[in-house]
Amino acid sequence: MPKIAILPQHLANKIAAGEVIERPASVVKELLENSIDSGAQDIQIDIEDGGKKLIQITDNGSGIDQEDLVLAVTPHATSKIKTDDDLFAISSFGFRGEALASIASVSQMEITSCTSDNHEGAKLEITGPEIDAPIPAGAKKGTVISVRNLFYNTPARRKFLRTTNTEMSHISEQFTRIAMANPSIHLTLTHNGRTLHDLAANQPLRERIGKLFSRDLTDNLIPIHRNDRDIEISGLIAPPQHSRVNTQWQYIFLNNRYIRDRFIGHAIKESYRGLMEINRSPIVFLFIQIAPDQVDVNVHPAKAEVRFADSNAVHSQVLAAIRDKLLSSDYKVKLNLEHAEDKNEESDSQTKGDRQEKTRQAMVDFFKNNSPNTTPSSQHAVIPKPSHFTQQAEPVTHHSQQPKIINNVDVSEDDETIMDKTSQQPRDVLFSEMPVSQIDYIQIHNSYLVTETDEGLMIVDQHALHERYMFEQLWQQSTKGPLESQRCLIPETLDVTEEQMACLQDSSDLMEKLGIIVEQFGPKTVAIQGFPILLDKLSPKDFLADLLDLLIEQVGHVSQEQAMHKILDMMSCKAAIKAGDSLTPQEIKELLIKKDQVERSNNCPHGRPTSVHLSLKQLEKEFKRT
Ligand code: ADP
Ligand code: MG
Image (tube, rainbow, N blue to C red; front, side, top):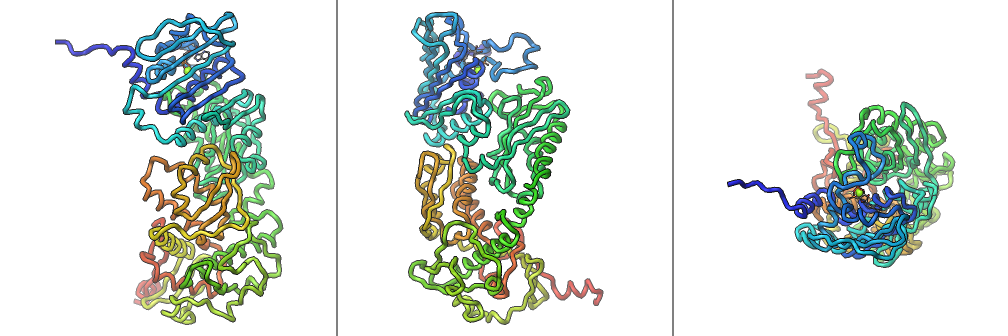
């Protein structure tokens, strides 16, 4: 008995939909691209409940003929390619003719459209497998498509939809990509009646990025342009002092289509090499133009991947375009300072003072955290000020605008408020176990501490050890309750994207656990009202930006516990003394004492060792004494 049958069309569509339509954001992408393909100059997108209830798009493009309406929702029906050759010279976004058919098969769809040839428009409603004939309907030139109750008939997929905020942030991201690539089009995005974006027509790219991202960033963006070997590269790149924890803020457009590409990603990373810390990612907005026959965009309908005929050429052109620009101007000077962990762009002496202030701040934290009774409000601890700071003649500037109040002692005050370490030692019960004076050590290259042990000698990586110590502190505190927070006297504000705002709203419990108090300050701005005491040498604003990047990257990929581990990891790395920080003898001794007190202290949280041991035996062997 024959067993094979061709699937009914509506079922085949549903299966195809699984590939193209993953979530509401995919619908938004397809509909937006169709509107742009139709030549629209004005496009409005209205969303309800993160797109789960409604996605509606209104454009003033060419419109669809009444006779074509049914074809528009029929698979493999398209107005965009006709011959084999067209397939290899695609200039439109769509060409497969399957998006509308797919969306219609998993939602309740309505299309109203009118072309300039017709006085009257027509409406097509699709609410089930059968499609009724279109009916006349009054309409302006252009198309309105509404998609209701996405996945209503595929419960398994519907179940995979996430919170309204998460779905909305995916929609915002799709919107952002398309808006950036089409700055001439007037684009509006609303959610539950609230306008999230209203982007004017013919906006310069920089201005558009400013509207979509933060204003702080846009002012500093550097334009690039290079046209060589038939590859034209243009766009805006951020100087290295603006960076992110991941590549999320790298937007690459190929012939005006958003893409992700491993080779280009690598070229970007390479072009900033040495100018940026190795674990940071640059911010770039790159537009690459290349002849359509030099690239295959037909790799996967929903994925943003492409195949280049000559990916090496693309790699080298991207690298050259960015690198040349970064190295050709005085950005380089700033970069070198940046590399030495300084953000101060003023005079050299100022920079030095700033850096030392940072180190001092790190140590202030360090001592503070080791104090036996650490309720911040009740304690009036003495904060040792390392002697070399008091001797500094240069003005010492605080790395953040915000005055830091620690244990009720304002450390940004003059010397009087802070006692010299020679006159008073920090009172720390842990110190009683070993007299500080008994530890001999040397610090080499402001990075390693060398000390004698019973068996030989030990070399400690000061950053790795302090990081390990900070991690343990943070981990232990976090298992007991929220991290201790202190109110910021002057709250710092941070401009956030729609996606970051949604992430913040979804992460309110986590923020509380971390001791970060954030309040909405404007439609796209938040104010940081409180910040963990353990991190108070960090800039709350920069930290929150990095934290949001990390969270957005992790949503849905890792367990809560793993996420917490990663966050504490990031916190301890940022808060720890850095390699290159010059430490006072007192600071070094205390760091070494901590070594024995930190559980598993032989490895920093990244798994790198915190110390290396060299036994007398090994030394003897090296010197050929045995
Ligand atoms: P594709 O975009 O790959 O051609 P779609 O299923 O997305 O396939 O759309 C099918 C056809 O419907 C398009 O080729 C186009 O002719 C028409 N169409 C869809 N949306 C619009 C729109 N907003 N304005 C004008 N025509 C449209
Ligand atoms: Mg399409």
